[in-house]
Image (cartoon, rainbow, N blue to C red; front, side):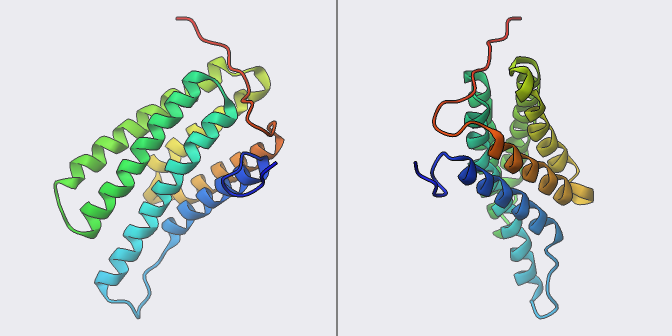
Length: 184
């Protein structure tokens, strides 16, 4: 069994989820240093925030596979792609000052928020009873993104540390937890 960062064990997932929470918290508290020029300080903030988004783009599909089910995996992949898009758009918009990337960022953020909301609903409705609590992870992520300037860092830290703890309790290996299909 592989236990590296790219492996599928609970330890690897836990490390990835914990790193995601720490990056978001770090981007929330990253104060610019007085020794930095204003341009350097701005780039530090842009890179921290983009790293948080990129870590979310990596962690969400792993979370989706951990919970299991085709709808969950699909929604987690959509959220992941939009988080990656937001990460790149943020670098171009805020870092390189290319203003029209603002619209790409907002579009990616809208898709991310809708996908996280849908992911929360699907997990809460379709997951087996003991896994329904995992719906808190996408809900907390959505809350952390929407409340980022005020309290997003601590919310994301708590959310993804909870995901890391949950990953330790989930079955290891490549067999996802089955999710019953929902009927409308």
